[in-house]
Amino acid sequence: MNNSIEQIREALEKAESVIIAAHTNPDGDAIGSVLAFSNALNNMGKKVYALLEDYAEKYNFVPGKEFVYTGNYDDLTADVFLSLDCGDTMRLKNAEGFVNKIYTINVDHHVTNEYFGNLNYVDPDASSTSEIVYRILNGWYNMDKNTAICIYVGIVNDTGGFRFTNTSPATMSVVSELMTYNFNFSDVYNRIYHSRTFKEVKIMGEALQNTELLCDGKFVISHVSMDTIKKYGGTIRDVQGVSEYLKGITGTEVSILLYEKGDNEVKGSLRSEDSFDVAELSQKFGGGGHKKSAGCTFKTSLEEAVSIMKNEVISRFKKGE
Image (cartoon, rainbow, N blue to C red; front, side, top):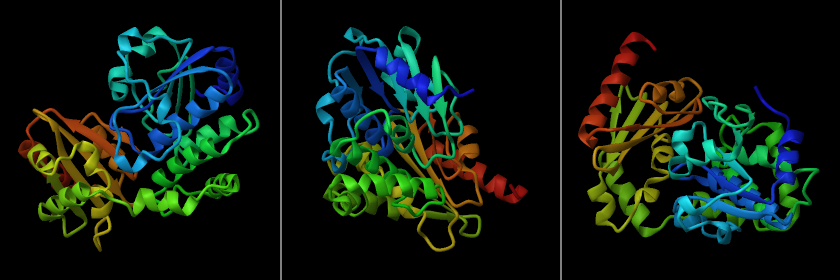
């Protein structure tokens, strides 16, 4: 089902303009992969439009923010639409319409990817989409410092700072090459994992207060309301990292954070160890992702979403699933 890297390069070489997008509520891999390609294609002389929703302040240092398009999407067109780190068109949100209007290249590492592009390159074994972006650029584009930083950001994000088992020897080989581009890789790491705004800390504190253990402590679940987020002047971007933090509870195999995005819209963020497939659980609710990191959306109240998720988890546990 995959096309070749060479086919992707050829399509991009022919294009004079490229729209690049990633999934809604972008994380470090979405940001890193989009801005890496934006830097590279701009340096190749292409007109670049990067489509990214507002993201967490801690990623403001990532080079390429000047390529982020803030105009009306209805007025935008290009020769190629490049979708990165997105398993299905719905998660492109406002950029979804470009898939049917513009020649589309789909590059991703989610096992649930629906291969919606004219060209597709999906590798679930890759640590991140940013690692795949490196494969595409390496040997074709003369790598520069800014692009290297972007790719490093994406890999660090999706490997949990090289702690997850998706960190392969190939991943570390890419990282070792990136580190030769003379940037402060330690500072980048610390910005991603050891830097939080005051409002992020306050919101996390409320989430910790709402934490419950389920199924003999194997599951931990928490929730955050929009009222809580607004109380501290935050946005949904400020809840990123909570589910990962919860997974650190001793004896816990799966962490689940449910947070309000709007009226009757609740986002689920799930993390797990190797023993449980949270992508399969998320698909139950129309979501998807990776075995150890996935998400879904409920069109219900926060209270109802918490109840639905708890009942599903407890039912599966009792059945030995």
